Structures are given as C-alpha cells and as structure tokens.
Amino acid sequence: MKRMIMVWMAIVLVTLTACVAEEGNGFLAGNIGLGGLMAGDLDGKVYYRSESDHWALYKANLDGTDKIKLSDDRISNINVLGEWIYYTNFDDNFSLYKIRTDGSERQRLVEGYCSGLYVTGDTMYFDMRDDTNMSHVYSMKTDGSALEKIVPEASMAYYHDEVVYYISKDGLNLWQLDLKTNESKKLTDKYSAYVVVDDTGIYYWSVNEGTYNHMDLEGGVDSVVLRGGDYYNTSGDKVYYIKSGDNYDVFELNLSTETELRLSSFSSEVFDEHGERIENLTTLSEDDFSFQEGAAFIYVIEDMVFSRGTLVESLPISGKVDCLMYFDEAGNAKYWD
Image (tube, rainbow, N blue to C red; front, side, top):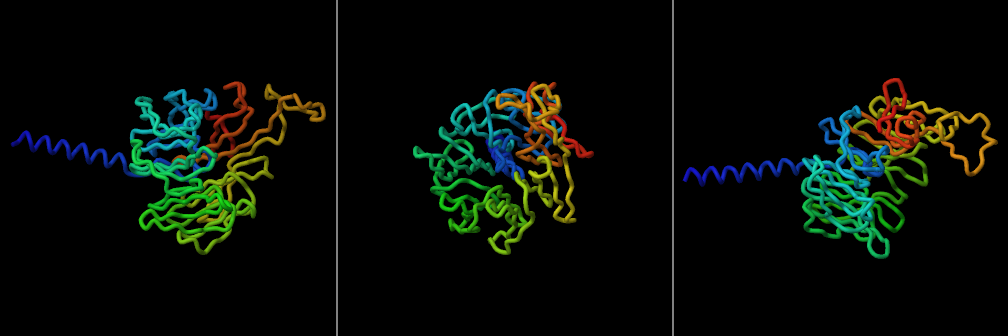
C-alpha cells in the first residue's frame, strides 16, 4: 500500500512540474513583431541569431559572456519557455522547430513556411502559408499535436490573455479573436504593424499615417503616442523606436514621465569596407562597398535594449559590419555579437 501511495505521489509531482514548466509566455514585449532574432528567459540568458556565426542559434548571458552555440539552424521568431526554445528555421523553408535550451532533442514540429510565432503555456499560435502563398493563423500544442487553422487569410500579430491579435489579408487591418468566446472583432481601419498588447491596452503602428497609437483592450479610445519613427517596440511604460531623420538613432520614450531619451549617437559619416571614413563621396562608384552606422529591429530583454544594425566597431571583431549591439548609459552603441 505504501508503495502504491509513493508511486501516486511521484506521478502527481511529475504532473505538477510539467504544469509549472508550461506556464507563462515564450515571448517578450514586441520582439517577435521585429523578426524575433533575440529572446530572453527572464533569468539572465539571451537566445539569439548570431550575426558573427552565419545566423546560428546561440545563447549567452545578458552582458554577452559565455556564448554557446546550440544549433547551426539559421533561425527567427525565437520563443523561450521552460526548458525549450521554439523557432522558425530558415534552412528548412521556415518550418517550425523546437530544441532544448542545452541544444539537445532538436525536432521539427511543422513543415511549412511559418512566421509570427507566439508560445504561451502548452499552446503555440503562428501563421503559415499555403500552396498559393496565402497566410493563415494556426494554433498547435507545443508537442506538435492538435494543429488547427483558427483564422483564414490572416497573419499573426500578437497574443495576450487568451486573445489572438491578427492582421487581415483584406486591408491589413488589426483584428482580435477572443479564444474564450470564439468571437472576432475588427480594431482598426488602418494598415497596422508592430503590435504589442499588455494589460494597459493595444499599441500599434499606423503605417500610412506614420503614427504609433494606443487603444484600450476593447478597441476604443484610440490616441496617438508618437509621430514619426520606425521599428517600434514597447515594454512596460517605455516605447523604443528609431528616428530615420536622426542618423537612425534609437530613442526611448518614458510614458510615465513623458520624457524622451536618445540611446545612441551614430556617426553621420560614410565608411568603406575597412571602416575608414570616405572623405569624398563623389568618388564612389556603384561597385564600391560603403555603409553608415545605424540600427534596426529593436529588442528588449529584461532591462537591456538591443538592436541589429551596422557598426564600424564590428569590422575588426567579426569581419562584418552587421552585428547585434546594445546601448550603454552614455548613449553609445556597443558591439554585442
């Protein structure tokens, strides 16, 4: 009898452990909407597509130390939840994969062109293209079972609190699907992108108007937060974005204090393949390699802000101008990978 009780208790313990591992979200802020090239586990680790090693999957500490390659897969749409990393694999036509955080047990979950991956609990939401190249939104369990099309002719935009947010094929408007009631609702009549949803409401970029907007969770009280900019990402009470008119520098807007902070100060100079400043731009031909420093694809992990972009500093380190960078307290963009 005692042996039966102990076995039963062991089964319960294993079940509870599995439930704990399945809680929470695998994504942070608006990182997936910006390609999902970097992700975090909220425990000091960053999982990312390495710019210095052929876009392979790596993990490292927030400060860039202890870098470890996990897979040669060239990846995007990275989610990290429990002991698993979920991602789309460029080398397999963007099919959906998962691998353990130690690099073991790599497996393909779905074959097909997938994007917009959001992992929450034991369920995944993403869009996948059909034979005509049309995207549809799907749900699926994290073990690869129960694949179901939930929104036809749409692409995944965000997930929050049992609500799926998606962009319709017709008009590229933002919609929401309440998973509890299975009711859909149109939220915007605008071409919408860079969607982030939290308990305060819905943030989105109104592309044609060039404004970053906020509305409540019911789709009302729509107001402009910012005008001008690109690559928006929102985390907590801070909005991050790039101003194209300011050397593609990264800025932070604190919504609580309504103050703006410049996070980078890129050079306006043009450089050659050796990182040397080009004095006379009129001597450049179409075949000459040249670049300017700048940022794009902003990622927020814990209290750090990262970006994929171009830096002179990257050339002597990796031999490439493209890199992942972070921003120090002095407003300098620094090489990370």
